[in-house]
Image 1 (cartoon, protein in one colour):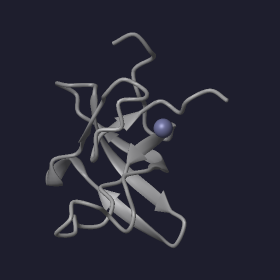
Image 2: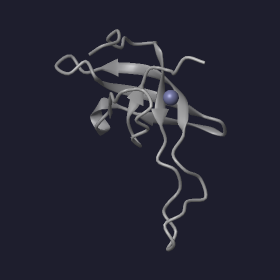
Image 3: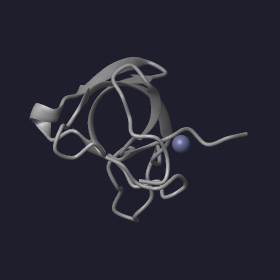
Image 4: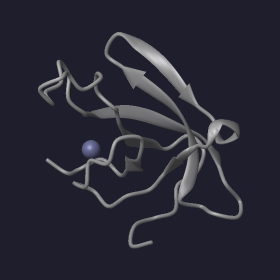
Length: 88
Ligand SMILES: [Zn+2]
């Protein structure tokens, strides 16, 4: 893992899934980076974390007991994954 291991309370990005695909393949809302607080870290796989995701209009909890979220490199934008916030 090239960046620091996540710890409880750190703020990361969660990549949202966006809205369902339309018949033409487009989406009303495409995947986006959302602020999220790390709530749990998998002891056996520190790249897998539980998150409290802070969407602009609501919160979403993604616990380890529900699969957690897996680290992907910044910029990969894989829906359902997390990464450290990009630098401006
Ligand atoms: Zn991001």
